[in-house]
Length: 160
Image 1 (cartoon, rainbow, N blue to C red):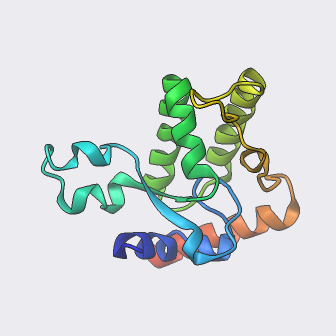
Image 2 (cartoon, one colour):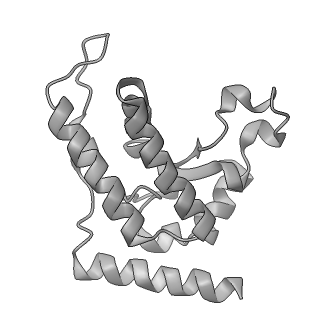
């Protein structure tokens, strides 16, 4: 795992949250992956961004099993929705903590996508929206809300 990924997991309190920056549950630390937000990896050399774009301002930490492949599937089908979700992730990145309000907006966009594309398949004939993509923590659950608030306070206290 890249150093920046480990730093972001710690800085954003993702292990304590037990979720990634899109709100998907993560059980094992090895399930996290770095997602390029602003400059895609393919363009980083051309744009002279160090470390192939693996820099904090250009990244979101996602689950390599669910949210990471899902956001790329969305990118292929609905570019505008992908950009809207990316804007929420950039906002989380800039805040320095996972904000429940951003997650609620992301969940809403995912639910709309799932309604619109529930029966769609990829070009290779596989289902577009795998069952695991629809399993997300309940953002109205008291325990989840407490964890989000506790980690937010921890992160903001550290930044002072």
